[in-house]
Length: 215
Image 1 (cartoon, one colour):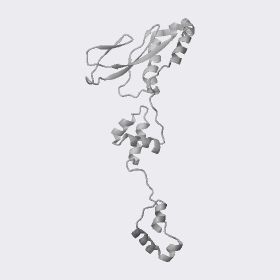
Image 2: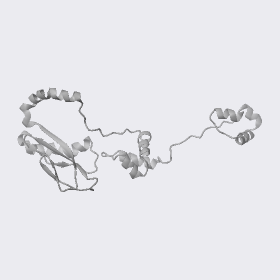
Image 3: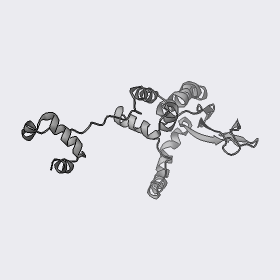
């Protein structure tokens, strides 16, 4: 009867265990106050040790943090373990890189309808409009050269099947173009890096040269 009752409550025991417990507490006292069998508390897996949690925290705290896959390879654990450390142990959130902007048919129509009004607004100040653009150059095996806004970029080969890639940016305006800016290799481009490495130098160095007194 004791085994059946324990089984209903979710405990799995054998008859010999029940007999030993009854004998240890005494048959008379066991009738009034039966021994309680408690489930073992399961702690966190040993793989998520304090040392590894500390390493993940250090990698996440950097301005240009590396992806989870590279964290897992560097620390020697699975990507799932890194994911659990970030969410469960550190209580942090993951910042995903947004996908390339895609224009819907509705957005295309709105731009076409507003294009003329926009042109009328900027036509008087066209000389003072400064904009920039970026592009990723796939550096092929051939000895061709990649061009961005008239600037020539020599190629460099990583392998014939998987060519090296590099991101470049340049600003341009009515009065000319800026220098060509190369984004550091293996850098995770975010707002802070883009402002620090590209936009700030453009406005601090290139714009004064192009516009001089009108900068």
